[in-house]
Length: 273
Image (cartoon, rainbow, N blue to C red; front, side, top):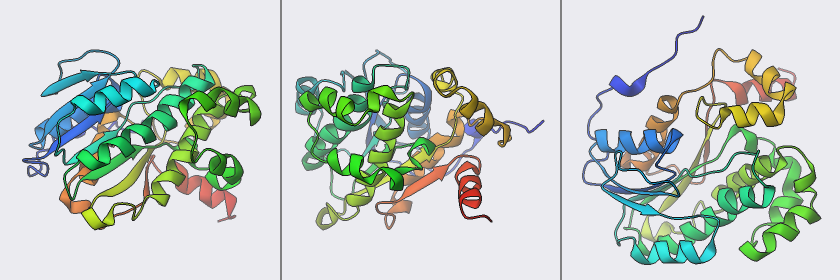
């Protein structure tokens, strides 16, 4: 059996020393592990979540990222000058589709756009996308229609495009649109040296893994058969930290797969390699 990795014992240089990073979804899973690693790499963490935690955060802000007014209030109280934003908060596909799209896409974009003026020059924004966003080229029309999607329009949007009728589609759509939005922002704030990239995990053993298996059924089981193991939060968080560090300054608008080779497997199948 393949041995699980554990990066928790790594002792790299303090690549985030002196940096302050905003981490959404800091109370569990990849967000919790990212906050922990930021601290171990010398950074300070401003944690945001709907669930309270005191773990690995210097300051905690409770916020519901599905609510426009709450996001505006959050931005008002967050301090100026943060060096990075890790958009990790997200909902699984078992929850109502309009909530998934609001938190995973609309709320994430709105929070980011409001925060950019408050970020330090040279800041790094890292969006946690997903292997679920791999099929974005097949859904360009839906994605383009979502560019200016506002909170009050989400319910109508998911009905109009049948997103509420397809099992798990809300999650896949939200990650597809997030990958495209990340690419489109490649030079949005280049004059200030602010960059945006995405990290796309494959199946990761977090509290919501069971939600994906429940939703996708045989499809998820088939995917898992070709992998040596599910990922761990400790596989993903170091990559997010690297993307937040100065070592990634010339990486702009990319979507970096961290999926045990699953995206390469899919590409090989698609192209007959």
